[in-house]
Image (tube, rainbow, N blue to C red; front, side, top):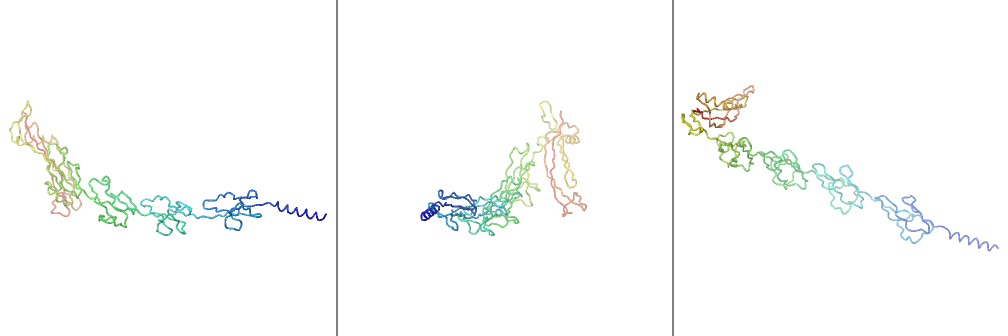
Length: 403
């Protein structure tokens, strides 16, 4: 009986041993993740991790190599830990501001940032260095930050206003600015570096100064009846030709170009005028009274029903006076001409064939001790004198008696 009891107890122990359960526990960073029993043993799903952490597999507790044979059941209760690798970021900065962050494994050249005014983006540089990254196929060793590098542009100014700004690697002759950017009476004469008066001729030499200014030179100006007709650059100076007929008043003839203070038309067009002369005015003349009616008592046909007797010529000149250094020219009307005619010819009824001649007057201004301006001779007070010119009109007509 005792022998049977021992056999039953041994059988029970064997059965208990054969019913012992299998368990596999999985942990991520020491935190319980999942469990499996014998009937469900197999590689579990991949845990969710941040972008900068890479999951490489499951390793048995204490091991660093991933478990690979998921058809082989480990003995007893086992623990698996997730094998995780942390990945570094590489950061791109513009000044002190973070512009972009990349995983080191995804290293690539970012889109160029917007450059501040007056600068151009040159590239990305290693920390504490001006060396720019050129090879973007591999991450620079031991580098987790790159800085944006900006360089000063070369700025071209026209008449004090910025016209064009170019990157330093594009420095070259920018061309001729539009004429609308500077006054009509000026011409573009080249570029000078700020602080220099010498025009740039060799554009292969890159200057240290980053501002260049347009050289604007005075043109020679030609006026017809006080209106600008043509402006000519100094290097194209020459006879500008004859103004169009429509610009010349009826009854006048173009005689040439007059430059102050000359009284005769300019003739030597191969020579550039000196003394700062830049303005020329069209000299227009009008024929005076026809000689055919210059004698007294000559009867001329005035109208189909009336005859006239020519009494004689009438001359009257515009009055003028010098007031505090300025010229005040008086006007002339028909009543003034008739008044002058009656003084000469009391029987005058009309003044006909009135024409106008212009003459240039010259006077010298002298400043006295009190600062007042008075007319004086330049040779007496040369150091305080200045010459001025103005134009007055002379009216010529024929006084007639209507019979």
